[in-house]
Image (cartoon, rainbow, N blue to C red; front, side, top):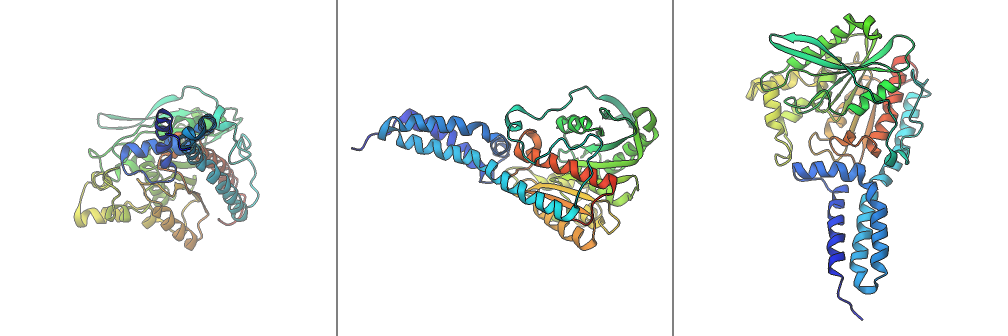
Length: 393
């Protein structure tokens, strides 16, 4: 006999199931983009509760069937990222092995022995937590530019230093953002300098690149007191900071910069200038114009000049690109364009291509996207710093 669905359970199931749709749909607004990060990188917490609620609903017979089906659908959507991450990680491992060969571990060994450690999804990733040192690396008139310095833990000699440049659309963000990666690298025997830089619209390109150069110069000048190696640096950045890191590495050809790491960066500034993203999520055209300081033909000329893709040639340092395919802030086409040119020029590189990951996925440090990224960051650093491995993936 037909039974009327249990209303409260159905509404509860819908409340859990609807956010789960963001596990496979691109978010259309800024708020939903932020929710999508949590759903895709932390949704595994919801799988077991949804399954338990589904079982409880089905025990109520026909009246609970609708709610039970919805709870099962929610569990499946929240678990989708883990399933995709598992197969993606296996594929990326094969690609890295084929392109880079056997890698000698870095100063602290390899902490991430597998791309995804399932217990870490719930208990978190172990890192040494400590307060970094605050330094001023440059003065621009009355403006002081600072960096947080994370000393390498357990390093017996001169440590490799990672200069990390924050994101935020060139007009915001902080060098204190995403601190867990800095602590993780420091725990592995690398020093990390997380720098701030002059922001738009008050300051325009190439001010942030000049600041990155100044930070690198300051680190070299103070290398003895900081315990770092003046001949081995890595540039790294997220989003807008990734563009700055890539641009600095490709323009300067500093032999002490052994590699560059870019998280979801706008590497093709010409494309970004011509084809801005969804304005309901982010007014990327405004951000770019503010960063460049000009529009029209002058703006386009600056877009070319500021584009890492345009400044990339065969002498570029090894490059690691980390990006999610459904990124709605910085399209994955940036990686595709970089991949083609890096391959054509024969530059050592690797792309961590994450089919589910949104922009800013590593905000959830214990999530599958962040875990996979850490695994390949460790190996990339070890490879480019010890000059081991051959070819590119």
